[in-house]
Length: 489
Ligand code: NAD
Image (tube, rainbow, N blue to C red):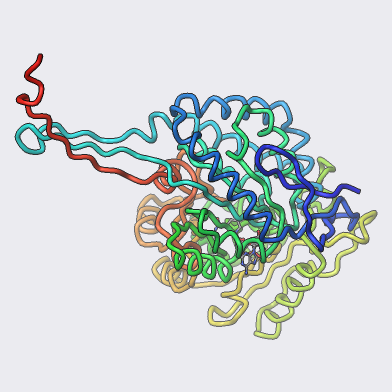
């Protein structure tokens, strides 16, 4: 049985951890390996190695620093299927979803190959007579990435390629539930001619995360996970003077107007709500129907939920896999029960399903609650499972008001045929990622992965120019070179 190792200072190292956790295939409940809960001393070893590497890596010219990324892109393509399979095995999503995730990872590598242009500075001649000013971007130092379980391959890539191409060094701490994907990625990074210490992998859970937040050599934290933890991470790391970007949880609303193309809307909102078993930070979680859309949409989405093919994600015909763990399944099912207690109708009940051949898996089938009271707990709690709650209002203004009353702001989408309604929604809705006739409004790698309100703590998001700004500090230089000092010429 595989014991997961750490990668520190250019070498694979077994952890001295006293405790290991099982890594489990959520579709079969089979053990895939054991992950160490690495102690703080191993975070320290990684931080020391990364700091030492930083001293020379920051001096490597940017055009040279991106060469390992070109190699990484080629290696990711060559090993694409194997990594996607690993994502499915440890995380449970379908193989198609895993391929989609890894495609996004590769796209971030591609965008970061443009760092020599993206981190260019500014220059102003003659800000005063004979005086020039310039602004240059320099790396910040050792950066740490703390990742969640639901996108084990993609999320570290929102940060890592930008961090190293801008001259920083990195420590990645994956979720202890899904450590195997990053092991595969680091096996490729090992072949990319990066100096030892530029990229480091430490496998652990909460204690090591806290050691990262407190470590004096670590200058920047990129976190993605639940809101409760994001808030703690932001507070604790900022108190130590670190820069922090902390992306949190979500409860994503979609609004359906009566003029929407109902067939398309149903198909893509079903993919949004039930894809990745609802464990996507951009999953549709609340569907708000306006006027006549109520009946047509409710019927159509119920049919889509019932007919979704659920099973082991490596089977190409399967449309939805299991949720991550038995406790997660129990939590989701009890939230559905709570919704029913609070007055919602369970239109489609996906609890305790029988998935033939996978009786030990952690499955919940697509579930739909209707007549959800906007003031109930179920309307506000992130379920993080394949559960869609339906609400109904009479106007788009009411719908937008309802959306904006939520505490999260990760994504909001509108389905309509009206340009005027779309324009109003785009302008008035309080969310960082917005979709118009789109079910999962995930920004491509050349846009920031935005997020507002309790879905994000910080200023600069992951991906693209935001990542470049986050991983660099600006230096402004004001220069005067009087001719009198160069008389010899
Ligand atoms: P989580 O918050 O439980 O864990 C995330 C990471 O933090 C893990 O690596 C974990 O080991 C570590 N951690 C957990 N508790 C900690 C603590 N108290 N102190 C320090 N580190 C700690 O999240 P999860 O269950 O792995 O992921 C699901 C959550 O992530 C959902 O809420 C989802 O919405 C969110 N998410 C958000 C985005 C986004 O872009 N906003 C993207 C993906 C997932």
